Image (tube, rainbow, N blue to C red; front, top):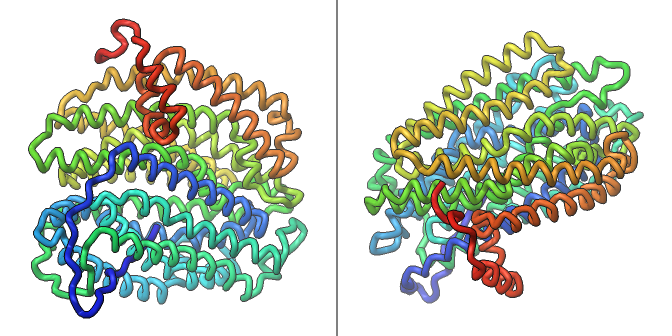
Length: 593
């Protein structure tokens, strides 16, 4: 995440006239823009992660060390300020957009404040790179700590660019420019793919018979870590261009007085506390997972089958993909609608908006969960690299996928439910939910660390991730119902159950195809990256076709809601959809359940 923007140039010293506010994009168009941007970015992210495994290995010391240093900036940014940028400021920006200057003054102050604060925080964090790495690892040797610190010096400046990207992205979102925020990460992934490709061209691919730590050079550190930060910086800077289209006059403004920071501070206090709890928990999970890296180094053989931090984060990258494409994109649009509903005293519209969002996302999310479980093996192999140990490393990642995928529908449900509180400017309730889940999760994690061998600790944490997603959704549900009443829970559950059965049938068909391709016997599906891709494509098509046929046969209303944005972008599909809608449904299918 990241971004930054500059004011449009003013000619001849005359300030340009602010145009009328542009008409907001339709929900369907905004959803399509965000979903497509997220999809492209995530696919490129997959390519980047798979290529990185080729370059430095997956379940290897360098793989885990670089992963540690490169992920810390993201977690620290969310810990320090991410919640404020991503949630609290949206209502404030929407309010400011109704001012005579359409929020130009407020936005200028906000961007100036962000740049100033994030620059100071980044400098301090970079100076503390060594202590940060030491605090977030367990059992690492001196060479491992030294290399991790060197990586961190190059990676921690990402914190600044994450802040700029987030604040400018939210300005764009508040003014209806949803697509840019989701498409900017594409630039980052393209840069990083080019950097890793250059690394492989200069230093070659990882070989299992080498001593990575002993042979690692400064040039490799600079290229790999510096290139990663360059991608994040460009991701931020690319958002300068679309800011001009908002018609806002943005210029440095250090008059922070009058911004309503006291009011925002009261709101942000709970959000910041919530993000601190959640991300402190993430840092502690990461610290516990680091034990696996040290334990793997003590093994004489079979180390590639021991999942470490790279494997854990890769499994999260895979399972979060459908959530990012569908739930996050739709929730971003609905969040603005929820915010406006509360501001316009239309709280009665909230249950319907929430119910629609939950039911619509059930169609892709439930299927994705089943698909990940079925295709866990070849998915893991995709990120196992090209060394002789690649199949074993891929299998280890696949095991983590099995443990995390079942919590995916609950993760998306929780994400929607929690947006109701944020839209109402209630950040205390999400903080209480986050704290309760973090406490339970950390108690379980430290208990596992004491009872489970370090070589298996990452599998325990993966299982814990899925379990806490379930608990979060259940807790958020009860609190939403208590405050706003029934949002059509019965109908939502009914939708999830029906699409669940269809997804399971599609999963069974995919399992047969996977068996024929050697997916259960380390055959063709595990023989390399491209065979894994072919296996995923074949089995995926089989499952999607079966699933869609079942949904169409059942005339599921939520399918129409899901494909609507896509259909409106494709003329032939739009005509077919209109024709299908003209066919009357069976009695009772449109009524509430």
